[in-house]
Length: 220
Image (tube, rainbow, N blue to C red; front, side, top):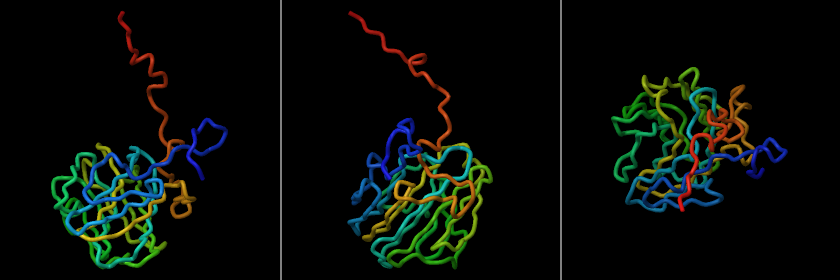
């Protein structure tokens, strides 16, 4: 599947990738910005999707653990747009920002505090974590190799802010491949009516003719 404009005669648009413009120490992006790789033990390394979750609907992202290193602390989840990257602090342990994170040791953290433990670990090569965000129900649900790991309520106030999908590595090497739909992932196979983060699935813009709102004036 290749990204192309939605009006090109197909139903394929532009999919989310990892955002190279969101800074992180010790990170390498490859494979069309779908693989994020931590190359350092000195920093916390983070990658964020280019497209935020829309304010309504159900949305899914698939991540595959590439190298299977159990020495790497990997966390997968969602964080609000107010979060500022800190190379010395984990998202899941940072208070003051809305976040729901699934840690590779089987723990779930909400808003910087431990919420649930004893869920499936994802420390083996090839293991797959799906994240389903239901903005209408206000929940985040995780699946590890197809088995649900529970649904978690989005904290009060969360839905009023842009919400981004993120992956984080803690002071060790690791690799994660994301599939936002461009490699065949269809989240509706897991939860009905769930869509991928892609331009053809986003709400129509309220401004349909930008020239009516912003028009440059040339002076001679």
